[in-house]
Amino acid sequence: MSHLIRNRYSLTQIIGKGTYGRVYECIDVQEAGIKKVIKESVFGNDDGFDPYEYVFNLEVAVYEALAKSPNSKFFPKLFESFVLEDPRKGYLVLEKLGYPVRMIRKQNLDNCFSFTNTAKIAMSVARGLKYLHECGYLHRDLQESNVVFSRDTNSEVVCKIIDFGAAQEIHNEDGTINFEYPDMDFTNCSFSSLALNFMLPADEQDDFESFFYFVLAIFNRFNLYGGPEKLIEEKTKLHLDPISVLDDGFLVQLWLSIVGQGYRKKFNPDEVLEVFTDLDVDYEQPLDCEQVGYYFIVE
Image (cartoon, rainbow, N blue to C red; front, side, top):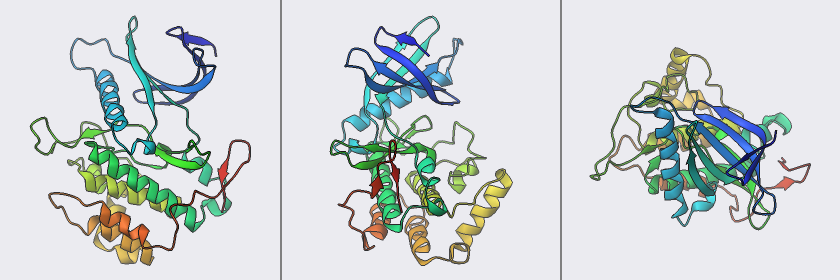
C-alpha cells in the first residue's frame, strides 16, 4: 500500500476498521519517517445530520480535552486532525501504539497475565477511566480491544485507553447531567453495562461496570457472550447474587466497590482504586515484560 495524504502521511497498511472508518499505519515523511496512525472517517452525503461526521468531531473534542489533562499519558497523543473534500473525509493523526491487551494475553500461558501484572494493568485502566471522566466524557466501549500496550519515554510498557467513537459528554452546556438515552445500539455489547444493554442512559458507574468485565477478561474469567437476552440474563444474575456467580473474594470486593455505591448523584472512583491499593503490589514498578519481536507480557 502506498498512498500519500496531505503530502505528508504515507499509508503503509490497514490495522483496523469499524463502523465509523478505517485505521491505517502510516509514515510521516516530514518527521524522519516516524510511524504514526491515521484514523479515517468517510462522511455521508446527506444535507442533514451525519453520524460519521458527528463521531469524528466528538473524538476530536475528547482528544483535545485529554491533551489538556496532566494525566494525558493514559491515552494516545493526537498530533492533528483535518478534513479533506471530494470525497469528504475526516482524519485523526495519532501516535503509534502497541498491541491490544487481548492479543498479548492470548500469547501467555493459560491465557492469563501474572496476578501482579493483572493488578497493574487494571489499576492503570481504572486511573485512565477516572481521568477521562474528570475531562467530562464517558467512554461507553471499554473492552480488551480498546486498551493497548505501548512504551513510554523510559521504554517501560504501559497501558493506554483508545477509541472514543462511542464517547458521551457527561454534562450538558448548562452544567446539568447529560441524562440522555443511548444514540448507538448497545443491546449486544458483551462488555457494556446492564443498563446500556437495556438501552438506558449511562453514567460513570456504567463505565466502571464495563471496567469490571475488562478485569474479568484479563483474569480469563469473562464468559458473558451470546445474544441480547443471554447477556441480560447473565448480568442480571451477577447483579442479584455476585457472591455465588463470582466465587472469588477479590472479584466480589471489586464488584461491590462499583455497584455497591448504588446510583448516587456522584460516583466515587476512588473506592474502586482502593481495592487495588490494598493489594500487596508495588504499582510504582513497571510491568514485567520480555522482549520477543516487539514485546509481550510474561507470567
